[in-house]
Amino acid sequence: MPTKDKDLTMNTHERGGPSIVAYLFALPPVIILLVYKVVPFITALILPFKEYELTKGVSGSAWVGMRNFSDLFNSPFFTKVLSNTVTLKLEYIFLCSISAFLIALILGFIGSKFWQRVFSTIFLLPYFMPAAVFIYLVLYAMSNAGMFFMYSTESLMDPETFRLIYPILEAIRNIGIPVIIALAAINGRRAVDNRGFLHTQLIPTLKSIGLFALIQLSTLLTMDYEFLSYLQNPTIYETAATLDTFVYRTALMNNEFGLASAIWLIKYAVQLVLSILIFFLIKRFFIKGVFPSQTKRAEGIRKRGSFVGVVLSFFVVQLYLLLTTAPLAVSVVEVFGDGSQISQASSDLLSGLPLHSSFTTYAIGITFAVLVNMVITILLAYPLTVKDLPGRLLYTIFLIIVLNMGMGGVHEYLFFRGKGMHNTILPYLITGFFTLANVFVIKAIYNTRYVSVEERTVKGVEGDPESFVKRYLPRVVKPILGLGALQFAFMWNSCYPGQLVYLADPNKFSPVMIFRNIIMGAQADVYGQLAFDVIKLGAAVSIPGIIMLLFIMILGGHEIFTAQIWKN
Image 1 (cartoon, one colour):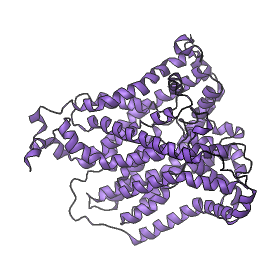
Image 2: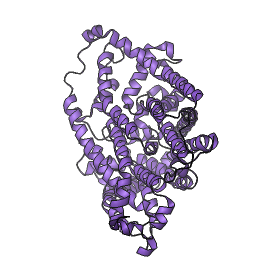
Image 3: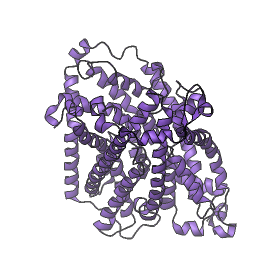
């Protein structure tokens, strides 16, 4: 071994144990977290006990004690939205988990990683499409391709039918995430284990889907507000109203900030307890099954595939396409088939929209936010990768506490408003700096895949700058690039909370927000004569997300998709 690497071969205890210098790497992003997450969070702890008035601020508003909580618990509507939230969440988790388990198990029979990626990419496509585009295509297909659907758009006016349709649509959009994680676990296990189906396929799949379900349960009281808002209407509030939609209407439409903050605090407390319990449960029973170590390959490993499995996988993909993509494709073909007539009837919907400037501004802005996000993730994750580092448990709990703060709370809205950032894209970009789920993914990948227990205990000089540069940084480049691409796609495709909450000027909207305003606005013919232009715009705004998906699939390292579970 070269002399310059001599220090890295020494035992950790010969160098005095792990270096707490690791915390110095994390100090700058921790300070940023304190400013943009913890300071607003302190406001969140006070607001529920105040009758907040915008003109008086937090300190000047009257103290009302437990009145907001009392009003909340005495409201029958709160009980209803709480029940709706838990019901819809559990239905989605159950449906998505069962479907993903079966699909991953079948795709796992394919020995070729190339064909695995091809098939799994198909299941991931809806996730990398903006929710607004996905829902528009679904509603258009339900309106015009009834032969493929049991339900029409009128079905969404029925509360009980909505309770069935919504979990199905959300599962279709997100099912690719648990599937790709399970396939990564299967391939990782096959690389180190030459035993049969039970150990190399069934158990890794069960653990991966179990990981997905547990992380989803840690956000039991949180729904995808943006996705849900596209399907909601007043006739179905009985089953469609959730805690997130209730907070949005209560705080931003009725200015009842104290009541909305009380709901947020209840959600936070419940989900924080769940997250801590589930974190240690995952660490104890699931993490090694999803991120198996590949530092030592088992003897006699060879790629194994099954012809029957390939045929069955092809059948499953075809069935999925028939039930999901075929109706959309038929509708789009109908629109473009009669494109000349529709274009003549169209009022040139896209003219006058600031699309070019919007694309440029948001592409540059999101790229900057993602680069900052990647640096913060690398630095915050480093102390978690240092074995036996003093205080690491407390540091981990701190990150879990901040992770559960989420984004879009009333306190964050008031914080950015107080800093003069309202009606700017700055809150949108700043909230994109922080994806603490990525920190735990980097930690898990590094600790279980890239550094064996033997290497860490014998060669483990950890925590110092030399170890950071020579060992840690080179091993996290690939996963951090994948996580950066995921973050870019997530920010590009999202309108909430960064734009729905903070922006009022249409000239500052992102391309996806422009699309959303068109389909949610007063344009009566967006599903009729204007559909040609709407679908063209939808295809255009979907391109960046699809490019990120292709980049990630080429890059590999599919365990990074674990970070997206916290966002669903």
